[in-house]
Image (cartoon, rainbow, N blue to C red; front, side, top):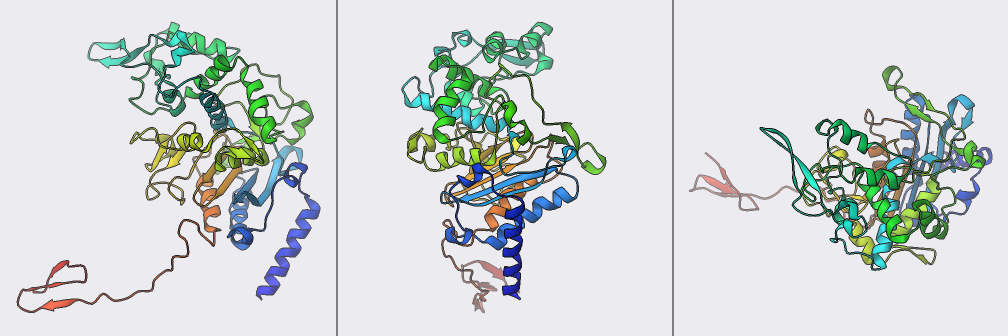
Length: 452
């Protein structure tokens, strides 16, 4: 029976490869059999089954999932449709809007400049953004909303870790201030216009998710003297071979773009939100969002980080700087966007600080981030594991797809580098010694129990 199942699985895999051959980008990836790196091919099929259930239930159009271990891609699977209405099946080189998965890349760019000696993490950003030298903070009192001087300047560490307070509540702003906060045509214009706005809190006093990485982006531009898209192309994308990562997707690649869907149908079923089409090029190259990419491209970026800043002989960062980025810089501040405790935030990445409280069954120190349209990635430095999911859905909080991808990758590990070869012990009764005169007995650990 087992041989028959294996033969059937191999036949189906060969048939799928003939019908949906690997893309050129996928063929260039380092590949390995899962068993050669301590993972199970059969267990990875559970990942495909989970994705297919969402697709069959019309909660997802399609997906691309990638799992890599010890530098080798052991799973790359395109499922469902890239564009349902266009009868276009999903492909492993499909291009996705990655939204906030832009943030780790832009944060990496600024840390490359950190390594070149342009700033210290606790330097004020006014060193390069003098517009932010004198800041005030909104404070609600019994007399109303007041502005008080900030206790400390905004630093590079603050903008990298989302503790800068740069996103005040709109309802506390005047109409003039609300107009100032609106996005302009370029990043430079937007940030300069926001400079007079008060802060939401004293820098370093809270963690609040928002536009902080746009300030990271403008710092890259001010320090380097280059537009952000040019810097990323020359310093990160070209060296790593990320040929399909863009702010403006070329017209020649539109037929690879995944359509975006919203869960607005009955029972959270999907409806088309945005079809793949040629779009007017943007001149706004932000840090919070904006990039489009593929699973193979994001694997290259992730593997560079997992390798301690190097990929295929090209070094972008030192191992010590990568370790600094994936260290918790926010203490016990709740990383509320993750939906539970158990997480911290570093310099561009969140990380699991307490697996018992985290929503994914991963090892301590696993780090990553996700995008507002469903994309997500996890990097586990202990298990040497990378997990990437590419989907396009404008809201995903009604299902657990992000937790599923992490859990399905972890359960496929059969030789854990974290747990080693620890054996599961069988039940063994603990001997207890009675003391007839005392009215108590002591168990093996010295715990006292009443006997009468």
